[in-house]
Length: 145
Image (tube, rainbow, N blue to C red; front, side, top):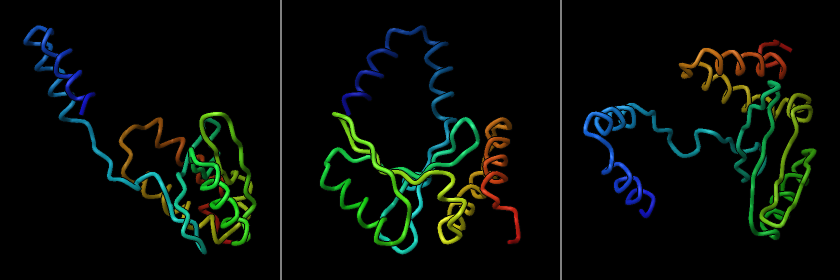
């Protein structure tokens, strides 16, 4: 709630017209429901974020501060037969599944393609919609094979 208090205090110093314009802008923002960016990896209890990179490749990733939790997720994904990579720094641990591994694993590719299709249908920004379409093409989501 501290952030909200700071925003209100900062907004109080603005001229009335500017306050009104920013309130309208804020009210028109689309609120995404929790879990809108993630899928549950088939055969596991792991929820991973679907990330469309700038080069129209997809990466599944999950960040954890606790190393033992990151290792548990890593091991669970490995046991389920997924090719997993893990990176660590002093702040957090990243467990990820690369684009190539998603594309080659049909069991994993299907839910990712469904999530991308959902995003494509709901996206209003033409540029982002094009990136999602290109990512779907790169993943071979549209192939019948």
